[in-house]
Image 1 (cartoon, rainbow, N blue to C red):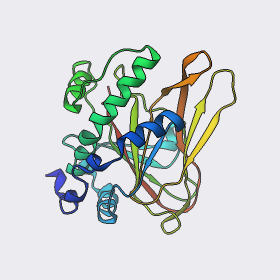
Image 2: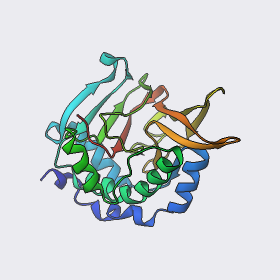
Image 3: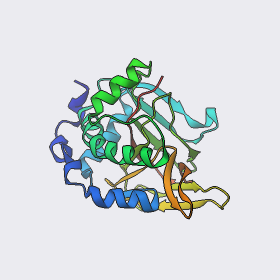
Image 4: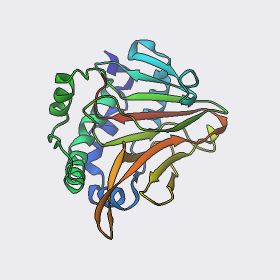
Amino acid sequence: MMGDLFAPPLAAAAGASAAFDWPRIAGDLDEFGCALVRGVLSPGECAGLVAGYCRPELYRSRVVMQRHGFGKGEYQYFRYPLPDLVAELRSSMYPPLASIANRWYAAMGLEPRFPAEHADFVARCHAAGQRRPTPLLLQYGAGDYNCLHQDLYGEHVFPLQAAFLLSQPGRDFQGGEFVLTEQRPRMQSRVEVVPLQQGDCVIFPVFHRPVAGARGIYRVNMRHGISRLRSGHRHTLGIIFHDAE
């Protein structure tokens, strides 16, 4: 099984999102446009995922970012069936995030609404021809970076996603900070730098979020990226909840 690589440490992460402080996460997403959750993955889980980067049978495709103008570095998209740990994180984090997403869409006057269970949302994606899984592992070396971008893969987009840092800053690499930008109408852009440690998770918007202004709710456009690595190697697990065309 593909999940065997991650079976020994799986119990530590299974249902981990149930222990998240979801009211605090929702408040941080509303106020700052991102939420940091400390110590979600154990060092063993992080090491297992990093070791799996060299197993091509786990992935459906590999992207070298420099070839496409995305930055420098590379990443690989997992194939179905997803490794157990990745599938567990994706399915367990979705329901509380769907509640936040539905509240955001209502505030912005957008449709559709998102079902309570991830399997139902994936079925919606697949019915529209979005059948390729999007969770991925990213790998950076010295001098690599990821340009500001949005992870849009088709008509059906879930508006929140998560990234888990698998390497330890200061030990495995220097630089390589997670950066989020917010483009506000008729105002200068705002930048958020998230201080991740190994095993931490950052939850953030895929493309836009609601913000309360003097005249009511308006949308701000969001992009995320990784600053240049000064040295070492950095690995990240990305959890995207919609599938790709």
